[in-house]
Length: 436
Image (cartoon, rainbow, N blue to C red; front, side):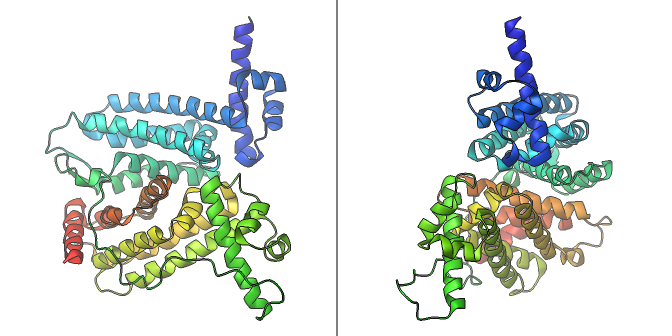
């Protein structure tokens, strides 16, 4: 039957785009490769989809729908207070049983442009709603994890995506450690402050931020410059890097061209290619600049005060204020990180690993009565949960407002070491003192 044939071809195309992306990433998933993998004609492709993006989004929707049904079923089998553990179990089971689809949903979607990011985030929000609905059925004194549901799901996506990207399995120990991390955030359901992303008032500036936003230097005057070749190259380099970040924020990595970068930077093509081999190298330089500046100001704030909780507070507040000052760099290096391919992702993983350095001192601060210290997976979960919060804010629009969520970031860092209740008390105390 004609209708059945069309349906079969559509299913083959959906399966093919997953396999092609798994082999070479979204950038290599051309229509030609997809139809070759699916063994259908180009006419058949266009009978089902308007373009490559349409096919990709349809595949995302299909996979997300299956995961949502599995997660809902797993949650409904458990008591409502165990919904978060059931959600994590559903995500891990999905990654173990369908690793290629899981990688497509949790990793490749991050590289496929704004509409794919929208689809990824909507899927996470749908899963988060399953948790919120379950929590409505528990009493006010029932213990549930005080972590925003969308951040819990998003952080788990990121933990799994990293392993799927490297071809690693998701072992049971990883799931156990993640559940132990989650248990450290348990509070009475009636005390729901930390289960939301409601911004709180913080002080308007950070003492550790001495410099303002990073800005491109003035363009050099026409003619022979009255400065060294190294100074000219540095001027051109910084102008190109910041122009690259601005265009990626405005148009996305895929739509940004070298011609557009040189025009925005006010340099010619020869100057660009003396410094960078291609657009990808310029994008890598964006990550380098963002990473170096973020780590410098965060470390400066961390070591400027005494006491680990206060150090975490000052580092987080300064980091968020720094991102607010530099929203273009934040968007390009955080939201578009996956679009730049393996090198950009490697830089992102280095940033997250560097972030965990600030957590090491927590072992010394940990109460003696807590016999089981946070694991390496807990450190990774803290980093990924914080990153998911920042990513979501960076996606929201041109005005980046993050400092109001610095208390949430600090709480996520402190809770695995001191417990959810004490972490909330410490954060509120430090926030109040900073406003005095």
